[in-house]
Image (cartoon, rainbow, N blue to C red; front, side, top):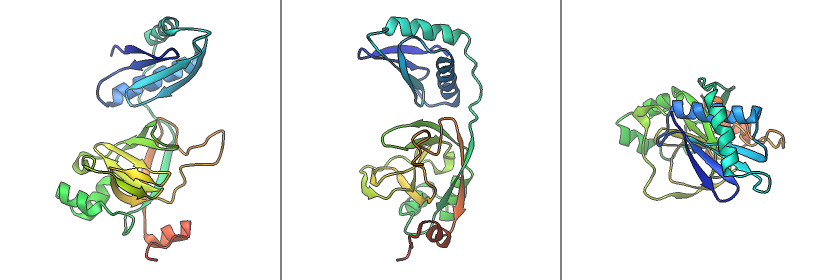
Length: 229
């Protein structure tokens, strides 16, 4: 898999491994991220892994695109690409009303019962691909094909933090009240924002995620929020 290099302004280089999301492309992203962390080019400030590419930011006073690319190409010759296997995380989720306003729509779109949609979501093999859009928004791959649905035509406003949302092959647990065009199938009491400045989010890129079903009474006990109030 030969990556493509693209200069971003005067201070960054984007290394892209594929045009579409795949586990192989993401494994290459993570491997390159680790290689740069182990042997960083002079002047590099930060690397940001994404779905199929890696953004490498640098100080343009110290180095430039050509020098950074040359160093990265050397890293690529000895890249140790392995299956991404981070820490296993468990995220609790309640699929009961009113926490799952789009569960019926997903059921209708897929031809599955509500219970079958829930079971398919619980059976997903999820791992963290990247962070983006908002603080703590960890994009997870692993939604099983039978419940993959497209984004809505129009976003919904004021979606609560903790909402478990899906679109296509991806899943996300929201951390802020924000609009979304993804389908809302549950609500999680599991804190994603940790308030720890050294490790501000529950997940690291590459971590695996398992969803654990809870009922509304458990949700209320954990959060103090009564679903039926």
